[in-house]
Image 1 (cartoon, one colour):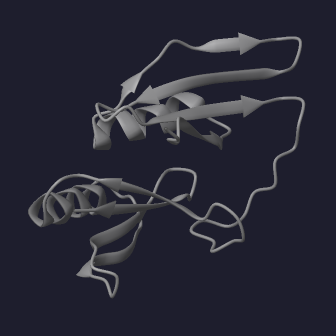
Image 2 (cartoon, rainbow, N blue to C red; image 1 turned 30 degrees about the vertical axis):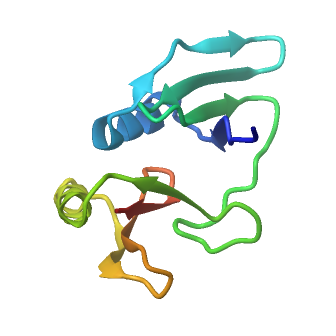
Length: 130
């Protein structure tokens, strides 16, 4: 059986990004891992479904930083299902109220999803779906 185990995100501020996914998506933060020799640290955020995000920081590499919400080749967004259309609406409004950019308001898409799109603190696109 193939399944995606986790998706990794580079960041300049591990704790800020971990807090975002724990606060708004009920993630559970794992312990911090630090490898000083490689200039690397990370924390996993786990969700009840089994999906995980690895939030990583480096002092030895220079990851490219696209602009906030950039549509880019390769991985371009995360889609996180929160349950119902009402849950999507409520979370989008909560994110908006808390000052997070909303790229697309909740709507029914042509492929059958009900979704809204917000940016996380690093400008990554997060589709919030039902």
